[in-house]
Length: 212
Image (cartoon, rainbow, N blue to C red; front, side):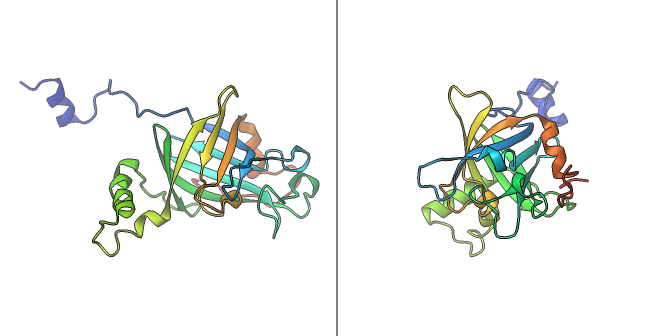
């Protein structure tokens, strides 16, 4: 007669298996409120007059997809220089799509094109190649190249500030991320804030949903 463990192995995960531990529930919309593009250690504040909620993330844990949206114009693509709220006629929403995994205080992101099937992403699967790369012991010529398409992100709670977290780094060039030590402070927003990414009330160009 199979024991409880045997049944779980035979039939798959047991219903009472604990969920994957996460530092926080990422579901919903998050807005950049501070940033350090070069990773110098000095954070800048988002200028609320023209860039409030102009750089946002929307997480969909059921699809394991995060949509990154930036309100920018050509040549003004970072929180340093976007004229978003002051110039609706010259700005547009630009989005990037990432499949992701989230375990404890780490996320692993892998980019894909909107409308495509998101790639499978697993932090567990990423552990070994990344360790080989750091130790220089990898022998497979192609083994060190796969992780370059993925970004490992460390997240940390901002103490004494509700629903606010540090992301270090974001994928290269996303929101102007320019270094492996770049960091962004994001704060939770009501989900409706992200509606304008797909249907902007000021008639800006909008984004195609990552997952139809």
